Length: 156
Image (cartoon, rainbow, N blue to C red; front, side):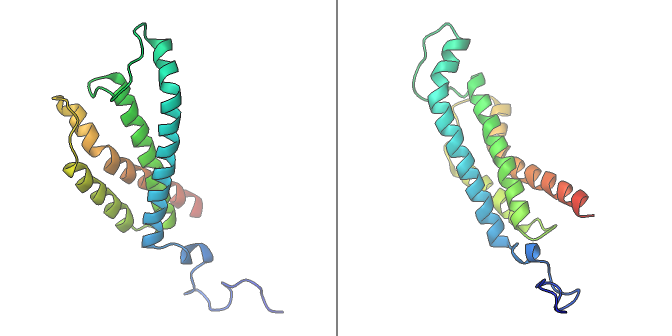
């Protein structure tokens, strides 16, 4: 009786279906899609919730406009961006070839280059500038590392 499993026909050199669907470009597209979707959700939530949270936590009236880079609110937004980068790194690691860092390194390097050509925030605090510059690349690499560690434990 023949097996209906497509992996059973050619032996050990044939990759499982999940490994055949993994590639460099799929990893990059998955990471970019995950990051953009999560950032869209974060932007919409903060747009609607920011005035209410501000009113609840501060006695001063809510001010519209850009967030001051020397405020705690700016640091919180950087934390949300780091979390979005962690998710993007995990998505890149999930959809790129198992155990390779090429898609993760490419995404991290491209974001680092893009950040360096952008206008820096108006702060003189070196730690805040370092957080702003390295938030996305480190988040992507850490998210990929966490996923690879998790994947290594469950596949072993």
